[in-house]
Image (cartoon, rainbow, N blue to C red; front, side):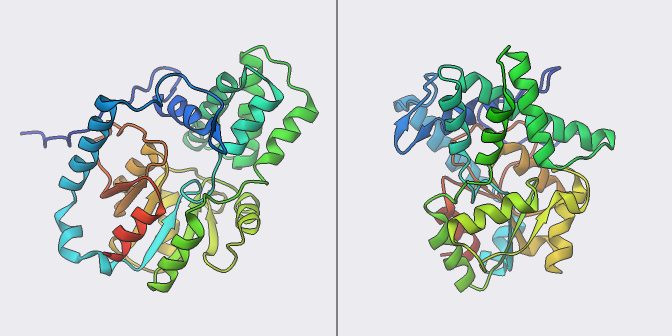
Amino acid sequence: MLRPERPRQQASIVLKSGMVSAEIGRLCQYVFSVNGRRLFDGGHMLLNRRTFTAMTAVSVATAAVLPSQVRAAGRSSFKAIAFDGFPIIDPRPVFARVEEIFPGKGAELSALWRTRQFEYGWLRTLGGRYTDFWRVTEDALAFAAKALKIELLAEQRDRLMQTYLELKAWPDVGPALRQLRDAGLRMVFLSNLTAPMLDAAIKNSGLEGLLEPHLSTDRVQAFKPDARAYQMGVDAFGLPKEEIVFAAFAGWDVAGAKWFGYPTFWVNRANAAVEELGVASDGMGSGLNDLVAFATGR
């Protein structure tokens, strides 16, 4: 039996014994730019002609593999959007705060912290030992500091955690959400973050009333990419999967949503490489304006 050809994708993701994702380091390099000032530069974020050409090729390739059923249905058939947290919420202040508290160590600590954040969530889901994302984040921070032999005082830990409750939306979010609302699309967070974390970001950003009640994975006691997490969108909207766009921030979340059956748009703000997981997003862009065009057909 012939194996179906896998979609062409840029680069690859290697999950080693420690489950460390190359995307995590890429993201932490990206988030180390606040107010236009680069706080960390590992040399990977500087675009040259070759990098730009490769990125353009990925965009073209992604458009070329849009599923026929999405093309046939027409984008106007989408009735709702389920958002991961970070297409809307800008996480960069967290990592800037790490550098502020631990000068010269912020990049390394942030990378390991964020890696363990997701690893712990996935392991707890697989092992049936769920705890919420706030606790997972706190545990991951404690591990990262210990592994790097950085003394983490309780006051420093609390200050870093508090930053998660001070986050705001990316600049393009407000106008984009209002365009989507005016187009008749229903919207909701479908996120690993806790409801209080999501509430804080909405309040900090003045986005009250635009999204329906949050779908935190706390409801089903399973982190994405578990199918129980994605199922919340179908249940909450009362719509078939094909009418719900899932807006992902990370490549692994793109894969999880596609495996579940959602039409998926990758808000690839970090210009991350496409994962080698046998699926591709139905659309990809660098911000929410691209999502608006995809979801409304404009």
